[in-house]
Image (cartoon, rainbow, N blue to C red; front, side, top):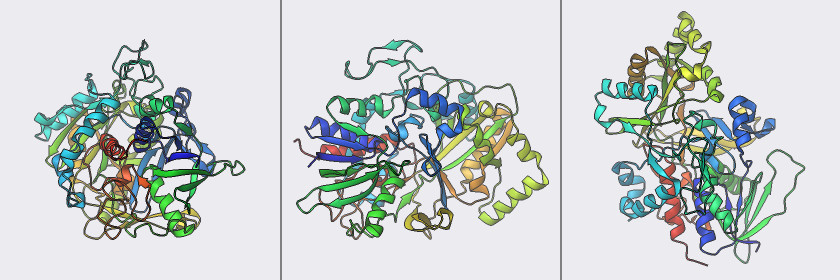
Length: 523
């Protein structure tokens, strides 16, 4: 065997696995389909969309991906460190309803008690502190909370960011000198296209950094194409370069294997191995059946003041809870997100998706100013406030594998509606928040057009697809994250989250990964 453990993916689940297994004395390798993201990449990504975007079919090797399905639109990060380069560094614990969700509360574990110590460890590793800054956009959100009768729930978000002195390199502030030196946050509002200053606590500055110091190997530009169980135990992993078809890599063999490729990456790989390669035929038929969007909606408002600059601060610095099920954060957009104004349009209310779509199109045609002012707005990213609205309610969709007309009839993931539990494409509370926000900033409320016209759920936090169960009949993995039917094969990423979290999920994914690794004995 080449390695004791091979890990596919380097996001929150893969990074935790790499460090903890290395600490336990195992020989570890991490395979990542994306690039090693540098500060120079982030500077260029914020300035040029083609340097930001991951679209290997077109030769684009950035670190940010937008994926469009019939019933869902999502964003994610690609590269060494996964989504940590493009997330807003919000690290929240969920409410009690998450732990009580029947999707996993029936498995004989008190998840709140079980995960408590692992949340604490994850918080320490990711450097969680309350955001110390308040600026104009935070005041807008505070007024929105007040207008919605939720002023008492408003406050700063817990962030994984080093708020030291800007431009001053400080000795490692987190790991007693074992981690990298760090500069303080510049409050430049560019978290979502990556922090070129190195102040955000991305995974290459904690888990992956420490894992490499212990001997873990990290191999970028490795897209895994097949997993083969070996006759004498263990697994062989086959990979190719995601861009260059002439670049060949020898297969890697490992005694055990962890898949941490993110929801889309993990599902696509497992479906491909089960349906096309036939190398993992015993994977549960429940694969992809329960996928969560975090019951999410994206809305916003564009301030009318053309000279306003809302970018001072971190991407997300404040939040509130308008009701018992809903969580709302503001978002500062970087320059690199200016193109997203063409995904936004007038705010339209209606629970019927056809009527809502027609009303939106009618407003755009009959009142073109409703869209013209937004699409032609100067300094759009400086004037817009985007709200991420999340819920912990029990809704879902499913992902299956088949030929897609939009993908030149090649096989790929396809979304399906789950009757009676449809992931929402219209959240009245989200639209209400956008209206109140527009009042607060004297601006125009906005919907995402893929929601209002396309009737697709929009999420930055896709979850599930490999949910836990007691057997292959009702789950894909056990409560120890091991795949049913395949000893030594584990899934440790957002796809293992069995319920909607209702808050930014990174801390929960990290805590679940910490727990999963704690169950593996030392070498």
